[in-house]
Image 1 (cartoon, rainbow, N blue to C red):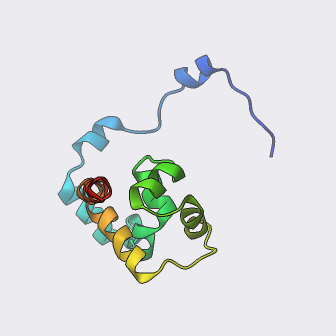
Image 2: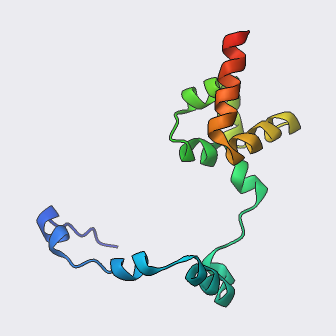
Length: 117
């Protein structure tokens, strides 16, 4: 495949293929109808996808160092989880699930527990 080079000015001048008016007009009922018509529109999110450390960390916009500090685990442990070298034990899975469900409250509680210790 050939590499195509375009000037930024050319890219910005190109009309977007996204219909922003239609996108803004889409409501929850439209989304539910689209999913009912084609279930591949919104694939099912599994628990493992929800608590995958790398996905969760990126969703929170944190570095590995920041996330490991927030969780109270060594950076090496987090890296091993993210790279699939080590299985995540049940207690850590529960912690990751809590972070996934309510990151603000969970990380605040962990920070408070660390400062109280």
